[in-house]
Amino acid sequence: MRIRNYRLGDIPSLVYIQQAAARVDGTQPLSERDFEEWFARPELEPEHNVFVITDDDEANEWGQAGTLEGVEGEIVGYTVVQFRRSEHAYHFLCEGAVHPLHRGRSAGWSLLISALNRARISALEVAFEAEQQGYPIYFEALLPAYDVIAENLAAKCELAAIDERTPQGTRLYRRELEL
Image (cartoon, rainbow, N blue to C red; front, side):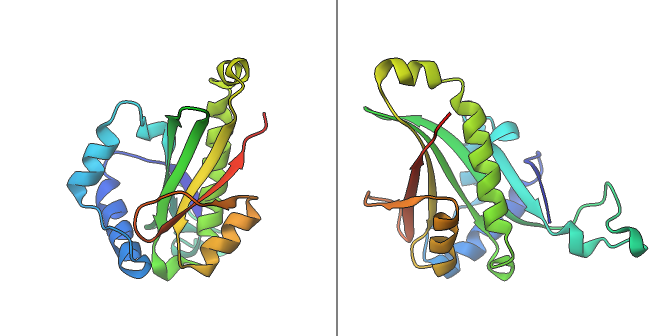
């Protein structure tokens, strides 16, 4: 599997993955229009803050040399990192989905690590301001509430479950970012 940044034209694949995951996870499905509106928000900057994972390592074998460079497989998951400021903290919220047929193969973990790394880099832009105000900077992930794999994934990334209201079928996990 390989992670890359979002590109124009990826939305139909993301919709397909999110809807398949929503059926399994009991979450709200999104339409293509929902994604287009979400990604059109200027503060999101999807070309920098949305990552997709493809199955090209398995799909594009080229003899004994491994994968054929420049050829990609299907998108099997994605994650979106969004910056938010609350009354007493700065938040980098990660949300996305992995197609149910590709779960349990480290795709979610890889995406979560990519999102965490992006949050760490972006946090440098607000670190001084947060320090001056005495506000923490959090990395958060919205994961399926009833998926044992999601719970294990959160623990692996040192995220603790937070008792806050979340969209149906999801649970919020958090850790403070140390810079």
